[in-house]
Image (cartoon, rainbow, N blue to C red; front, side, top):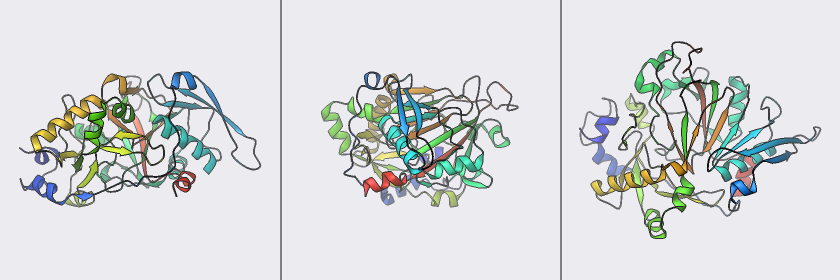
Length: 357
């Protein structure tokens, strides 16, 4: 059984030549570079053991002071003293975005938002995306997904654990996903963590010759077509031809320069890449596996354990992430019960877009 047959639904696997078609017809997708540079991130433990960030939010309101502290990890920050039910304006989002792009992950604690409030917050980060897997969408909010183990759809293990593998959101799309956010509406007492890795640090850790080699190579992507690593679970499946046609195969570079910070990062090493264009199939598979194994070493990984009200934002251009396995929860009171609302965006917040021109 070939890789596409293993990963996709019967609608897509009727022909064993599907993978050959993908290799020949993948669209080329590139991300424009920008002149704006946000500067190198300094030693985070030295420069920001804990900071206060003063933000002028509204002309008739006093400035707001946020607390900013590093996560217990090599990257990422946590923001406190912020209630997103209040006034959200461009300046606040710009400050949060600068933190996110510098540190890859931004955790905002203790939020209490309804669907509309969370949706409004998500809209500030770019164009909200409707995920191809429409059966995961939240009724009334087609750009919002319900990720968890408490709903009837979650009885299906393939749905419930369909993100338990390293991946980059939107790596299979022509227009790259820039930011994803996960809002913990039900937080598990046991398990249910999400793993994140730092693709900038992973790139920097390569030898210069290895960096140049990676920069010279590209990969073809299709939803769920990548080879899984040991311990990873199959991708939540595409179920119809209509879903498949919504995400045609694309070509992406293995190294992406971030349009805001200018940092180079490894990109899209899991879930969707199925061929390195510059290598024979077997060699390309091995090369992707080696890069992925390198990038997911413990020194590059943060494990987030959710607390109720957490909103975790991550920069999809400089991270990968993976779920962890979940059993079905019989109720939202179960120790392992988890429900996350997910939003993802294309593009950038308004003030960041103006910087980029």
